[in-house]
Picture (tube, rainbow, N blue to C red):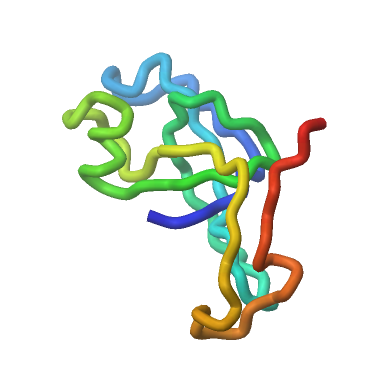
Length: 108
């Protein structure tokens, strides 16, 4: 599981039958260090996450269980929309960006 930021949506007019009606989002893994992460992941979203939100993403079987269909043709799924987190810098082993050690979702 990882933390990611929703950076876009994905639409497909043709896809497998078992993914019909599923919303797909493009998620960029959220890095707590200073270097930006340029990888992206397509994740199924049954929670209604929006662009710009921080989310928790599960992979593999955990993702399929999260959406309620272990036979679904997906590899990643959004399992939570993050409201808040706090990282204790004294316990973090890495190059922590101080601006990313605490996050609280704005109520805009």
